[in-house]
Amino acid sequence: MTGPATALKRWFRQQRDAAYLTNMSALAWADVGASKGDLLQIAKGPTCVGERMQAMAAAYGLEPADLAGERWRQLDMARACSNCSESRQCKRWLKGPDLDLAQAGFCPNKSHFSELSGKDQDALEAEDKSASQAKDERLHYL
Image 1 (cartoon, rainbow, N blue to C red):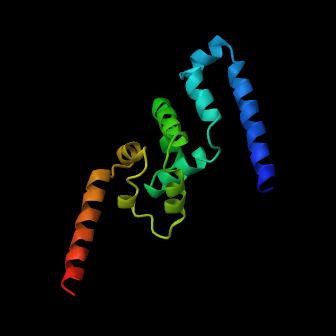
Image 2: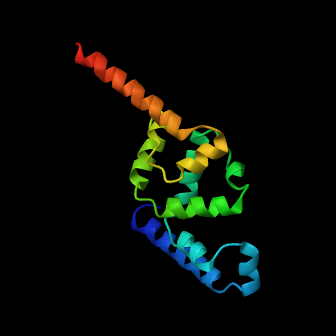
């Protein structure tokens, strides 16, 4: 299924999910531990959010289970990813041949991924910038 059929299927799924969430009881909402608005926003967001989050996690050396450890973090990351203005850049970067973490600074969840993986994003970016400047200096003398 491609094109309009895929979009229509996605729209129906989002409507079904939104209807389910809207009709949940107060007891069920209390068990979820997130606001109705947050979950409705995520449910109506792009369908590729989970896939992008898992792919970015894998780039940082994380497993899907690593993201599920803290519900608050998982919801915060899903909300950020579903509202991200850099989704096209993210898709291109994830499909690229070299997943250089120093180039992943566009991700609104970089601090979460860095913390979970133990990789310091700021240090990676500074190292990449330093290497780029050294390369520019070498080219200047050619």
